[in-house]
Image (tube, rainbow, N blue to C red; front, top):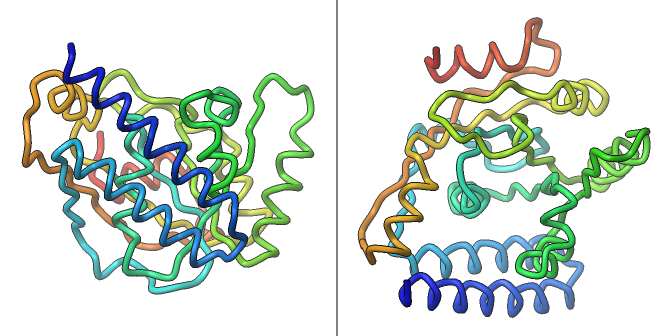
Amino acid sequence: MIRAFLHILYGMYLTNSYGLRLKLTQDTQKKKRLRIAYSQAQLNALGIKVKVKNPENLPEDGQYLLVSNHRSVIDPLIIELALKDTKLFGLWISKKELYYSPFFGLFVRNAGSILLDREKAQMSGFFAEVKKGVQEGHSIYIFPEGTRSKSSALGKFKEGSRIIALKNRLPILPVYIEQNADEILRRSMREGLKDQEISIVIGREISYRTKGDLEALYKEEFGLA
């Protein structure tokens, strides 16, 4: 219990410290370096390493709609480290709960994100923000399940992910986090387990023109049932 509490305190310190530093810069690549440093610091403290599978599928630069499965609060950190040797910089699609969170809010708002408020009747403002980000040269990073999955099965994809790719003519970069990162995080915080490893698989690029349901294409790429 004490160990978990100390992890939370240190995590809050890192989140707000980097959040302030991110607020002071508008330079995209500097923001990327700060996001990577933050992700590495958090996972180092937790004793979690990230292994990238099929790194040859990673583009060096360009603009993409990155789509990933979602099991844990540390999933964005895993993805940031997987992309650390590329020039890719993406705006994260962030839920209102994270955007205004006392724990993550300062970091999320300043690291490069677009607020998704599902309570709004109209989504035109959201899609306008996405378009603006793409026009500024950024990629878009999204968890198409919409929320963290409580089981090992992939949750149903929201239709909005496909619309983002089509409206902005973004090729799709699928990535898949193999392990239950939430369980690994829990073991690290409660039991102090170190040298745990999480693998993230980089899929092959999918054209926004490709016919078919995005969820089905994603499952086919990673051999998911």
